[in-house]
Length: 574
Image: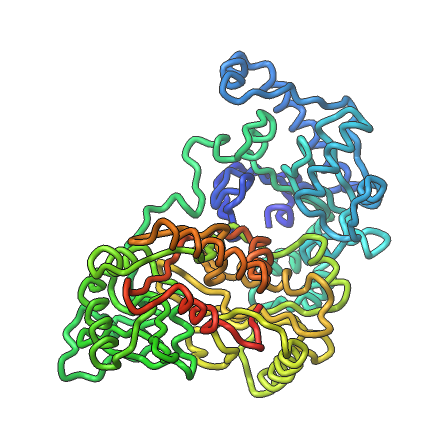
């Protein structure tokens, strides 16, 4: 607007809010920006010249400051090296340097590892830590970026220090007709940008602009390792004080009095209190026991056993009351032997120390932080994009469910006869109120599907199913999972997985413990139980021990094969 009002050059220094994932070493939720817009007389490189001189003045001033010596006692670094004439490297040339180095890169925006490697190659070739990458492809730039003579490329650039980007800039489209055309192609409604477009309708000269993150300039110039060290009071997603969790369904609060009332539905209890294992209680094979408090426990009758999985669905302060009550129900009313699996340490302590059961751990809840995941932009993501595969979140309608069900049946057919271990049945359309659905599709065919299940606020979400259907190109499922994780925030779990080792718990030692440890190692190897964990490890999961608990009498060593049988089926879940 200032440019259209005939201001030739405009700059601003101030706080900038970044409405994207900022849980990386180089991003802040709010940073200090230096933004510039200026009229272009002949060529957009006039903008580069202004930025180049500004940055070199900053570099010179910082490296001559006496305080630098003190900073380097805590953050060792070498002087930044730059040339009198800054290399302006065309984007295709940068791609070729990476390809010559053996990296598979497409004609698209570079990933962070590729940027860092290109910085190393530029340092080797030109002897500088500071350079400019010019003529970015149109598919990597916003709708308002001016196209180059070849419309595949744009009159835009990034500026790099020590292999990482500190500035993005370029020539802006100043023709309102062309701007509206680009907006239509990108699916941006004009009414959402009415005030912005008005400035161009009034007449705007050819101009360009750029944005510098000053915190990032400091962080890279001084080689601090993290942008948070480059600002006094940083703001990121973890800066706000933690708040106590509120229940998604206050009407399903088990701490309230339920005498004479209809007990809260299982689906709402899972959303209030549940972890990943509790979601399997919605399967048809599970029976549900209810406590007078409204709490619930799911179990499956199997021979002389009652197989229970997961913690009770109730407030954790009620475990001391609910757990013994359920054990009494199983032993006295059902007259079965309970085996309680995949429980937290708190429930394990109640069963082991108070009731006297044996406990052990050979499984972990595989948790991750969704805030560490951004929209996929690596090699696999670029390959998926080139294949014309659509990665998106969807609301299941009749057509989508029909196509997905066909893919699921083909997927099951391909796996018939394979011995695999799982806990849940594949029923993606139940409890849709607490589900989110993501799909990879091409030509009307569902290639992959990811279903997220809502858990208790402290646990976040579960990757309930990650289904890689027959015919999907390699890497598609990983891209879809990454996309799904980038669409949520906070904790996420992939469910229970095998532990690297067998851990004896309460009342388990000596020969019995050694036998179980050896048996466990054999089961893991024979059933290939590490495969799921290897797939999930790609997403930065960390294991949290969960336990298997059983009475000291009534369960022999050989009875423990029933535990494996409980999880066995010929229709696996990845």
